[in-house]
Length: 593
Image 1 (spheres, rainbow, N blue to C red):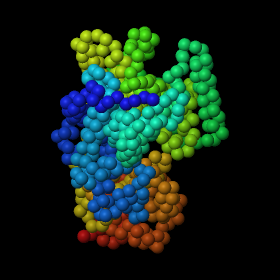
Image 2: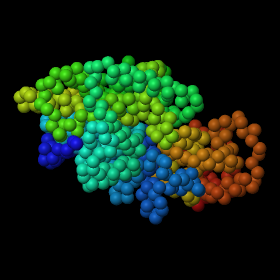
Image 3: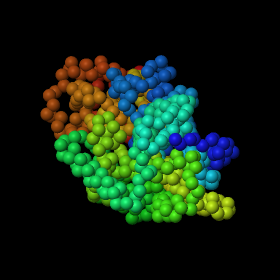
């Protein structure tokens, strides 16, 4: 069995954790500047990108709670029926925070700040369980909290930044269970730690399901390492290499066969990583990006040019150190003292680095060219599990395990020399990684960015607003055109909308949109006005039914659609009493007071 090291053995006491937390807090301000000057009126992101969805999430949760409604359902979108939000990327933990804070900008910014700082402090605390050099512990925390994976996704996917539970879960998991070689089921060592681990999984479930999947893969992979006795394999013989080759061959042909038989991989192979993503600095890197690297990210050789889902970069220093440690592993084992029980629980970490590396790349790919399907591709053919289809997001756990494993190896070497050398080497490494991870300033979405037309519409009578263009969109389908910015604007005008942009929308909702005669005509006028003549004329009863359903609706026509067929069709359909107002290029159609 592997006993747990006593907590008093941690390299970082409360003073060290406090200093680390202050450093990670300062880094949040550094990376997000000038957000701290606009804390209550802005957030990081692009107004037409997914961050507008996350500010809506935070706003809607509090709105529903304040009204005494189920916060996991809304009528603010897909009005009047509304929709459930269980399958939406809803981040309820941020919504709960907004119930306490009472202002969506502050709640979103505070939630992300707590997550970044908590991720760093937790990872540093986890490293201090085994690593004696404090700066190396701080390095692990910095890399996990501010990895290129997270920095690239900050202006795009706020849910993927909610990672503070990860290092604390790993600590609770290791405290809760004792593993023995050859046994799948561990011995329960601490009920309280097991309950803590379960609670952290629940919190993670209500933060992001990709992060949750990473924790479950870690748990299963850690247990499998002990059960399969992977640490006892002698890689100097030929048979382990032959077995590995056989596993790769069988995995490739089995995966290809399932694909040829028509099994659905839920686009998991399409969204798989590219080896170049580990080598090329991401867009926006301050010191390492060049015109050549930027051209690569927009190259048609990539399956999805310009997408942050390709970003797998972990810097150059850490992988080079990992390679150096691997090449000198034999000499280090001969020179190192026998492994202590505390260090024995870290033995699976290098194998887990390999596991998460393989998970990010179900199909080994180089610059868009498919080379080999890895056994991890089989996961994408398993129903339910294949909803984790953006496999590059598994690099999150790699960004914790890689610096942790490297720091463990470095720490053993540094402790055999002078203490001053250890501090100097750790400081130099920390500075080098810090420089690798610098990014250009992020764009901010501000409350002042809401077009004036929506502020005029907010004052109009009626509780429904149609932006033109409008539509329904989820991760699989799109009908019409639903801009994520419309969800941000809704947090300011507070009127329900008939459309929606959510992670998952029932197929019946799309079908209902297609069946409703007036909605169908408006959608067609938006996107294919030449096809309007093919529709049968709208019957008066159909128009009356539309206005009964969306009584007193306000319409905001965006400048590109002003005077276009959809605008002209709206004018013909409006009942008596509506008037039209042009506001900074937008057109507001609203009923009289």
